[in-house]
Amino acid sequence: MSYQAGGNASEGFITLHPTTGVPTNADTLPTATLWRNGVVTAEVVTVTNKSAGDYMCYLTVPAGYPTGEVRQLLILA
Image (cartoon, rainbow, N blue to C red; front, side, top):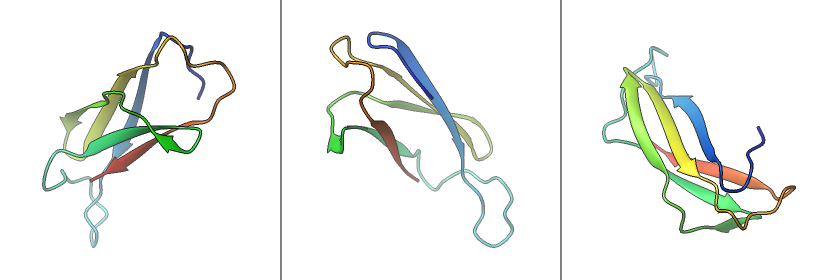
């Protein structure tokens, strides 16, 4: 997925029960970290719980990020 510098970005993810595979909330609210070209950034990533096991991450891509860079979200649940 591609996002423009200075724009908003969002990404969804789910957590599943390890034995039943049913969508289940994590024990605590998951956290997300933005990586830029293989390096952790200080950007704030907000995680919200939409429903059982269904989450969304939101962030603003900094204005100085050029097109073509590799950006990844690391989510810990």
